[in-house]
Length: 204
Image (cartoon, rainbow, N blue to C red; front, side, top):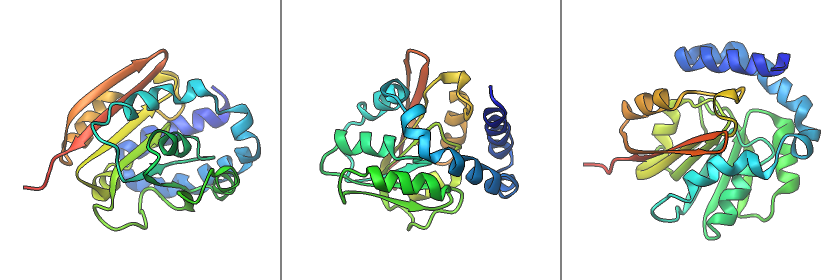
């Protein structure tokens, strides 16, 4: 791993254990991705990097109406969701202003929009999305659970499996999401990539 990739792995490991520690890492992570934004889509994004996520998205039982892509970067995952579900409204959020600028430049239509935001404290109402997706992103489990509607889904993917700099083992994802009302987990292994699809229980 490069120095930047090692920093991303350390940040992920610490923040998953202690979410409040994110405030110590947020500025440097945002600056790191700001610096990479101009070349990110050309050098870091390829169809292979989206295979694991797409496997989870294609397993949705019904097309979602409103989708949130956390850690959207230059918007590749959000664009994938928009292409797969042509009637869905898709919102991408990233803490990096540089990444959001690139995502907006590449946006295919007004149906896909991008906002600068912190995934640990999202600017959205509770239960406002049918689906939340994360591709190579640190999961802030409380916020994922808060914004997903009852009956909705969360899809989390790591394009290079355990070698992904930002990576959380699927067993940990299941455990954390399970504590927050998710169940019916489905796992996917596609080449080196791994992904998880979780369903949030309907309100009783």
